[in-house]
Length: 483
Image 1 (cartoon, one colour):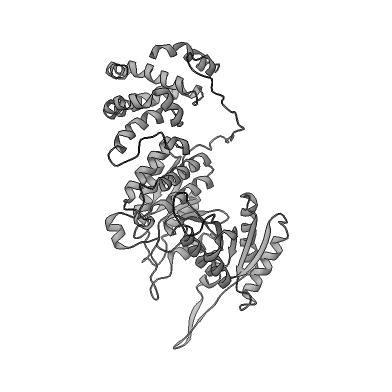
Image 2 (cartoon, helix red, strand yellow):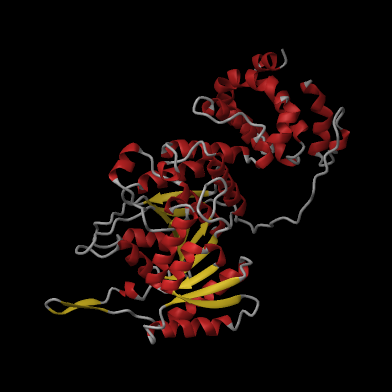
């Protein structure tokens, strides 16, 4: 059986293989799409600054590292310890972010009342990360009070009430200055409309309190109106912040992109996140002209509590989705798509959820399930054909996945049909758990030389080549496979 692929191999290596030439099989129509054409060097691994942070930060950033390694994403991390009790962000951390252009971080705890100033605010000002973006949307399979929620909150990040200009005039009287400038207001408005334009969004809503703060918020509104005239294809409207909060909890589906000053954006983003499914599942990032820092979208709960850390049950979903945003920012869209799809499938399946989503799983269990779905690259119809994922069979399935990864075979539905999954899986899982892992390095070298020449959707041929090669490595495998 294995040797029947030899004539096909010659055709494939010449680039002339025809799927219709396979005996006993039906032809598969393979669509050809215009594809992404990278520039030379685009596939080289990119350095990313990693700040684990405080509380649950090391747990969830560790989850990101595991998932990136599992899908062989072209990134590597430079890790720095930064904690909320520090007076300033260390200079070497700032230098690393300036050099790498990209950072991913866990939450940094900020003392309430007295103490040091927020390192999060310091980081945004130092790197001029003027736009904060939080995407709040319904995840399939996660029950919420409202459906069809898909809100992007874009918040000015460098001024407003967060300017840090406070002083005590006389004992018992404190003055805090809210700074609004036309430059920063126009800049954030342009970013919001540009985001809407590039992402096919239909409406931008400016959130304000200009009925009371007529000069400060009035300047912000004036800037938004000027920018809106340059985007006639995008609907623009305005809403007072207190009415906005009421509308969010009653009819959140009416909002699309929201642009806000600093303080309002923090309140609106956390409210929208709670409506759409919880702060533990909403991704976000902070971006400037040259640098970007990705973190959990909603600030509420981004540090967690001691009990979550002790039980290792922090929800990694928000930071995993933020890391997918990072991959897309680095122009690795296919890796971002794989990661997003896997996370959404895990949530939809419902077996592995942390406590905040109504489950009992640990962080590691969510990561393992995500890695498994990501490796198989499942779609909705595939889920019905795979054995239910449980704690007892994850290790066995990982051994089988190593075969699929080696050959670049992601279409599990077609592969099961070719392999007669039900009968062969039981044989393979007994043997490959010990054997395939030992031979992985040899397999990868051989596949790099030969298998890149053929088109992966031709799955029957992939299996034929696999059996042919394994017969050279271990005769026991061939005997077990074809008994």
